[in-house]
Image 1 (cartoon, rainbow, N blue to C red):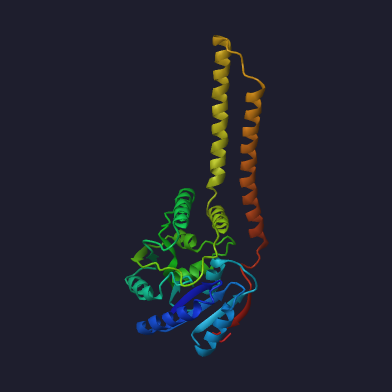
Image 2 (image 1 turned 30 degrees about the vertical axis):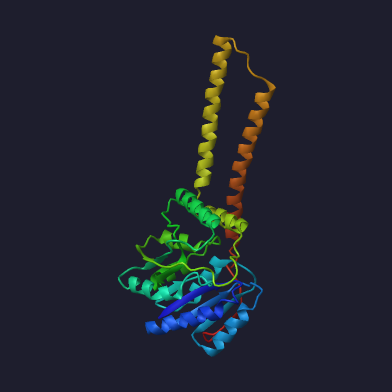
Length: 307
């Protein structure tokens, strides 16, 4: 059995086409399957379409959140209820082509727990591709995990991987990073990355930047260690510069610069200290959120699946 998990946000124009192509592909594969749509309170007609699909097809299951929680929480909710021996995760905008699922499945049957869709040339604006490239370069450096920026959420995972993922309940979610952390050998399948079927991405650059910062904070404490190194480096440079000033004053007769250099130094060090305290504060805040032990998401409605 194959479960297909699809987080949905403002996708009412895509769902009928997505369902049609998915059922055609899964029919060709001749295997049992379920389609799990997790609607993230986009405020459009997506939930009504999911409900309609579930009434005419018992293999369609739908979950609707009580509010907008985010894409990676939608993936988590879908995997939590998925019953398949294999779980496919894909986006709802048809940039991830359903016709690639058989290729992922065939590769998985060769003995891989995780098979990733390698998008090659992405059908995204140049600025977004550059931002993604920069994020993954920084992410890999800080987290020390070799996460391939050419892949997105589109992949197939085994039941073993899905069960392990279900036990990882930290609040800051990054689906790809959690799968990479497990360390299972992965395989890649080259796929075609299509244009969006309708509309524009809901991820603004501000949201992407916020997601990037939260993801880095969730998976590494390296910024804190870099802050310590920065502090020692500044202290060392200050000491060396102080020795240089003393040397010039004693042996060269050069007077020590006064007010201007002092003020610049104070402001510089003040900015560094505030920045480091801000980094520490962010980590403390995230630890506070984790300590609350609130649920990752709240499901307000379900359809299909006998529930």
